[in-house]
Length: 238
Image (cartoon, rainbow, N blue to C red; front, side, top):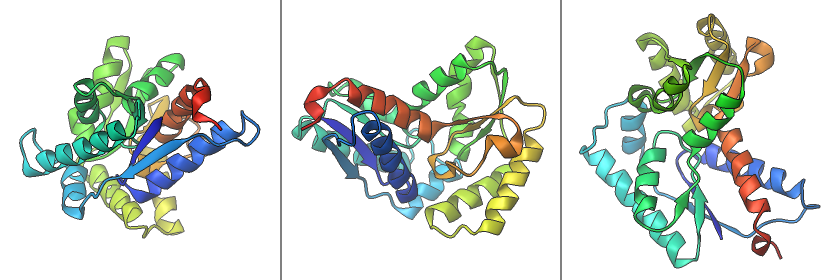
């Protein structure tokens, strides 16, 4: 069985499920796979702490998240899930650490996105993500060894991005704000040859056509990797 951990942004969960199903059904004549979605009960307090990069390894929010992820993994294990995916960059390595001790595989979003980046001819990426993702340098750790530089927004830009993500989570985005966001990204990404969407709540909000750069959307890339895995498992289809 394939599992999806949702709730780390309802918009992102919905988009990931829809994208995954479309990719799979287009390859198997409209058939749908068996899968389970477990939506964790993420509170605004936890979301805001991670958005603002205020979480340490032992902070209460980190402990609460570990408990929530453990509950999700326990649910999947009780229901014979062997591999799972979670459309959230910030908590990927946290989830992978839990899965390594529980005999269940996490299809790590950061790793899958990094693989796609390595196949492209890019050397300098402008990274859009939460303050936690940027502070922890999740992508830089993986890409620096391949001589790919990650460029992060300055503090004032990051503050705007965090507000934008918060509005996306609350489903309060309007077209004017989206246009302002796109123009900011286009301006600040100058000097780079790629843009990395390292937050699933930003998926689809930056286009290659507008910025004239390659855009690596982590949600789309995880959906692609998940679909490829599902398509190798005949037992997931009726």
